[in-house]
Length: 110
Length: 116
Image (tube, rainbow over all chains, first blue to last red; front, top):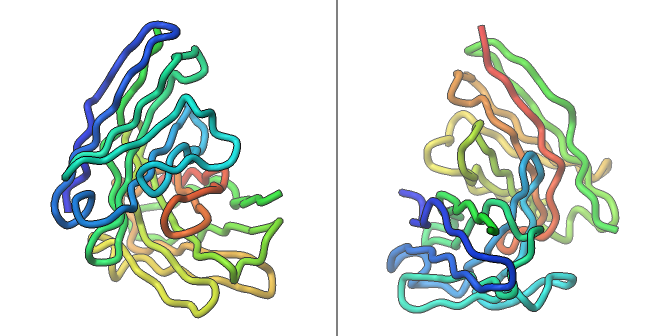
């Protein structure tokens, strides 16, 4: 199964908001409420920032929010900070009990 | 606190096997599944599979079936990932993570280098 589709890069200025999209199909994002988002800084392990489409784990800033419409999920980061810079990956449960990741999006904070 | 600590970097020749460990602390290994994810240099995340530490049930990525085996040792709270018939395409950082969905705690990663 091909990876979920994410833009290769997005950028935003300090204090602004950005949205990263993640497009799948009717057998993954469109079928299940199990989309997660991960933040990864260089040479570090990924960190969970959104699970089950819209839920923030304990300790994650309210500036991070998730949504889904049809086959596309989105991660919005408001009030951009320099520490938000990094790579972001979406993932979704699929119909054959597997997990699939997006190709990743590099966020640059200007 | 929840912690997953992985074994150190490995170097293997093509055709060899590697086994990476992931020791859990701060919770009971049998309460959650362990997922394995890898990341080739400069590339994105690739899901490899998961194992229920409770009953040993597993699910593997189709492109790795037959080459990868996930196991757990509940007596030592340790999960293992073994990958066989290595090629240069298997050079990557290998991560273990807690749970099946919403991977909420990750190991630090283990670099596996396959080179002749």
